[in-house]
Length: 161
Image (cartoon, rainbow, N blue to C red; front, top):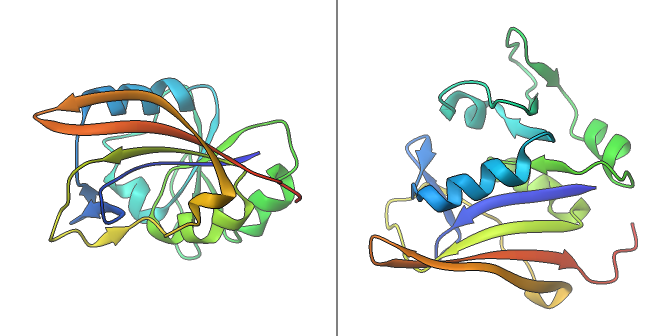
């Protein structure tokens, strides 16, 4: 199963200058607890933005031009689709924007931390999606530095793939 996981602002902003827009401790903890012992798939720029390898996760980087010692590289996004779309194994797409765009149509589930804030100088955005195609369950509601946020679990309705 392909699952997207991201933190997004009111305008779907997710990144700025090669980093996340917001650093919310509880959201980071949710990300870690949700993705631990799973496969995480990311683009090269997302990989570069990490402080290091993510512990207890198999990391896969989608990149046409780069090799990274000790990290599995795939060159074609369809490898993930072919192997995991109909699998019981949950694979997490963790960024960036291009990968979210590519895998949106194949995703059965999304975990989105929706932050009640905007970032005018964000330069990376999560793709728009039709919320009517998804069942929405709010897993957590909280506040960080006077900014409210909700962690949503979206399950695709009528998943036919």
